Length: 120
Ligand code: 5GP
Image (cartoon, rainbow, N blue to C red; front, top):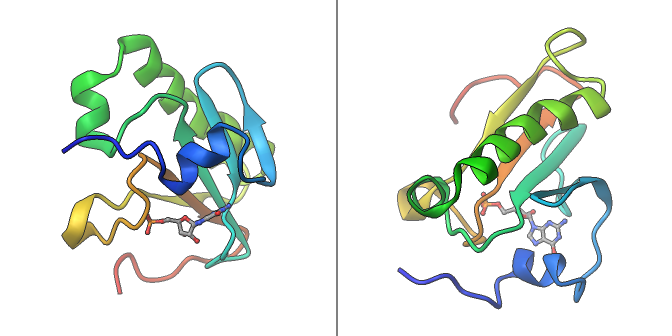
């Protein structure tokens, strides 16, 4: 599988499509989901061209992997939903059965209210 440079998140990263930014550094971008499923619904993506978590873990540098993981906790703090505050759900859809629509690795962060059943 090859990375599709024209996927919507690649366009957001290139600044061709706007987003409502939560956080950005050299390795990651975090922004609000355009179609929120919960009171807080934010996405965290690596800046590198990775399709999903498997592709990322196989091809990304250790620094990219560490920074991506750390960014999730940092964003949860910025949103005031870390486990010290209210808690949140972290979700990554992978491939066809996982229901992944955008082929650029992303974690969904859901919070701001009780998230409910783990899988529906
Ligand atoms: P997936 O189903 O791939 O895990 O999730 C893709 C997510 O990207 C969906 O929750 C969808 O609402 C969000 N999304 C799709 N297009 C855009 C966009 O142009 N901007 C933003 N902010 N989110 C998007």
